[in-house]
Amino acid sequence: MRRDKARAAARARMRQDRGKYSPEVLGEVEELYQTANRDWRSPASVAALEKLVNEYPDLNRTGCATMYLGQMNQGAERVDYLTRAMTDFSDSYYGDGVNVGAYATYYLACHHWSEGNYDDAQKLIDAIQTNHPDAIDHRGRALTELLTELEKPDSTPAAEDSVAE
Image (cartoon, rainbow, N blue to C red):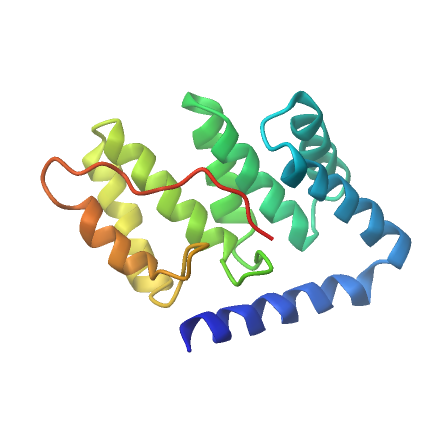
């Protein structure tokens, strides 16, 4: 039920882009995006995602691309991309129903937790529980359930570096 609702939201968001942009533009965007899915961490993937982010700042796929760049990077760059995905693309979705804003918030919480920044992580955990109680990961698991694992002593963040639709 949760996954079906999330996929419906993803389809609705993608329809918005189809109403604003030509099939040619959306085709180019999709080709850039799929470059990352073919060889996720290659230089060509990074270049394609950066082009998508720079040239098409308001598309649904740009939110997904921003999230990917957050997953690919480390340190301050990771935090910057994840923060942007969280704040600027809270209405973007992967095709499988994963909300970019919620997922970026989860990833950023995991990042802060693993760095020992528990106060920052807790603020993000609270935000997910309050603002995204039905959000899922790419496997359909509730982010709120994954957060309970994160908060256990000696836990390892459960964020996965994987690609999706």
